[in-house]
Length: 101
Image (tube, rainbow, N blue to C red; front, side, top):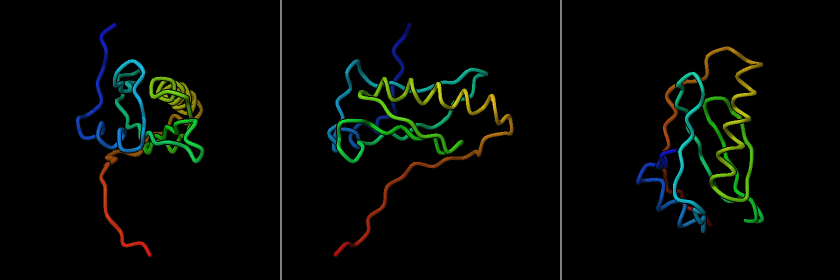
């Protein structure tokens, strides 16, 4: 099985958050050839990673990036079985700065 990759822009963000990629970067491709977005970030305790799919609003977690993505893939698949309506399209992932006290 070939190893998929994240976009180059995502890697610095994950490194800044202290995320270690156990087996290299990964991307989620769902059945029916839908490619959806996965946003992964450390949880409050930093012991777990949170994986969020903005197209469906599905959120899950895992101890590694790979586990979080696998859990998200399963959760989104189950969501789509129950909610066959089209997912929101056009998710845009960007960063912004804000002044804070």
